[in-house]
Image (cartoon, each protein chain N blue to C red):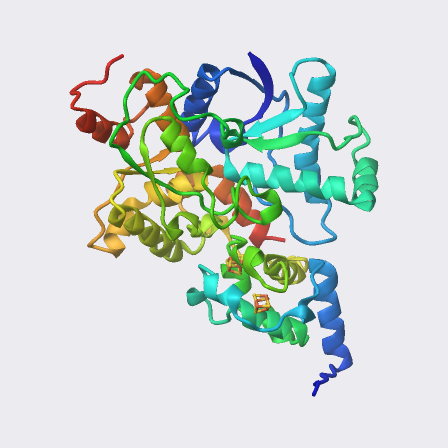
Length: 297
Length: 134
Ligand code: SF4
Ligand code: SF4
């Protein structure tokens, strides 16, 4: 099994435990052993955008130093770090790029971080989806059928933008669609798959987030989807957890199940449904599509 | 025929500060409006991203009082679409930073109830604090 460095980030250990559980299950079934970085720290959630603000890049870089140390200690097969949360992915990847591209920033950062090994800049930061992008649909042995299940893929922002941090074409991505198809479901997308859900503005401009989430989910419903998938715990909150607020603001809104993309794969690969605290909405639809009444364990 | 705009000293200095802090040459903006056209937060704000860019290029300090810089969700839609290759999200961040570095905070988490705080994912809180507190 390939040993790969894994960065969970804060939300996967708290609000998004099911995201981590289903991802680790999927990875193991597909031949990867994820080794969680020892002593990882919060990446800061957002990439610092101003030219003189180096201090906020230390948190992501410190995590990359851990990967370098693990590779040197032969704990990993390669100098690669995999993330699941889209926001961590963006922050870690962009800090890595900034560090690699600027000799001046590099020397300043090395000077401040004098208690750890100097970062050589060789770690590649990957999103979970990138590990499986070359898998051919049909080559994975599936335990459960998702045939006929229509899944609306929601990318949001930080998997795709800006271009240098994107895991696919920023304006015409297909990586999530391919993932859904690999696990036997049908993928749907519209331009709303890439519209921002309002992100952290959910803290202080909730009404705007409700409006954006309504637009995105309505587009999903109108496209004929049975469920929506996402790769971001913040999008998950905005699209799923506040659906009661969307119903209150827009009485015509009917609601739609939302899940992490890894819930779909873990289910198709045979994960025990007892692992979910709350049965994801897509499971019921999947069972109805294939004519099964109960989940086969 | 070319037009020349001459800024007074104060405005020129303000523009220079924005350019330094953002790393973006704001004067390259040709006012095409693409950034505003794709901005998800724009209809909520009184100032559009393209107007923000114009005011930044002209060194108009009133832009610091605009709401777009706080409504901006750093979604980078404008960033990937600007035909002049300007990263508008960095300009919004520079303007936020000019204000926040005076120890002014834009959000107060103590206004949220413990139940609301409990529900929010960590990344939402960390990101909002990073973007809106000094
Ligand atoms: S897209 Fe670029 S050039 Fe066009 S108005 Fe916006 S900043 Fe200016
Ligand atoms: S980064 Fe900010 S200004 Fe640009 S499109 Fe997104 S919300 Fe609008």
